[in-house]
Image 1 (cartoon, rainbow, N blue to C red):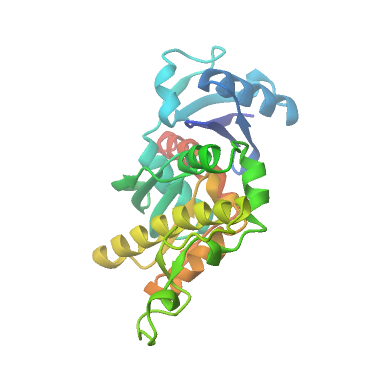
Image 2: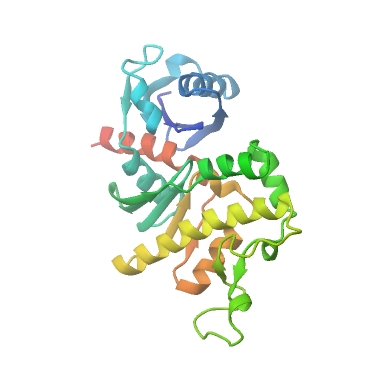
Length: 275
């Protein structure tokens, strides 16, 4: 057995995928620092899937925390993969697409054009999971990710957002009356924590979605693949479907989208090794 570990060491979490011919294991670890989460992810995955160190042929690191490692891990050949190439490759593998605009929504958001093993970083946004945690801490007094998501399930956007119907007495042919005119532009006195939590999620996904749609239309891309840890938020597909309806470009959230970058890192090195 010769297994490749793809490890995406992000700003707040580490994602790891074990790849032989197919994915044989995956998990995500949150920790106070990147090194702890990196080594914890490797140890947990080996334990859960009954893998020995001798089963691992290579470790491929990517993400912002990969720069902290300058030597082989546990004596196993260790290398790095370009993060944007890994995002693109992972997004294509999980979605089954040959070409797409891949967006990765983690601590921030990255926009990558991908085709085969080729990737082009088109830009990024500072809005992402870090925004959600930081603003929730100040606005809601809550910094626990799962607690924020739970609050948002009971939220009402009409209590915080300004919609098209709020500012126009006439129908606008290109916009439904429920479309957002201004995020947090109509905060009502009775707005609750739940409403703010949903408003934050809506703002982050609408911003990422509209930015991606505009890039795709300008560059002639036909599909947008969404990856990253934020894709597990329950409202993700609904919000992006609203953006899709306005711009006419499909958004795809593939299964296991959280692990796209880790998978892409492992797969890139495997494809290079086979040539």
